[in-house]
Image 1 (cartoon, helix red, strand yellow):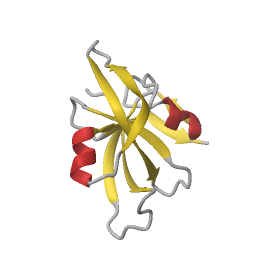
Image 2 (cartoon, rainbow, N blue to C red):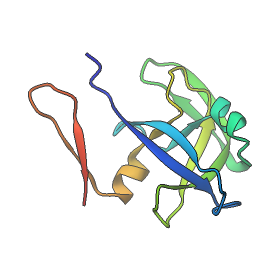
Image 3 (tube, rainbow, N blue to C red):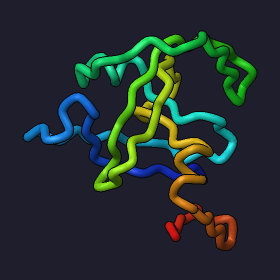
Length: 124
């Protein structure tokens, strides 16, 4: 059984927050991720305007794999008026991005685990 927690969220960009066709993405919610991450392939398919990062970041995956990221994008998720910054990198799995500790902390997310079942979350 897959115990990972996913969220499907609509989003818009700061460049076009009133777009008539909303974007939607599937995110892994990961308390072990120090940043919010978006798949470079997904960003390209969605036609997102990326900006160069101030510094190149080295990203280490849970399996020890590494990659580098030098671009980012700010997204407005669901109806949240505060944009979330995502670094752009290659993701090996089928989800579009990762909501890491910046998003979890911003939304005061609490995880509930019951009987080794899939976790749920609650925003405060």
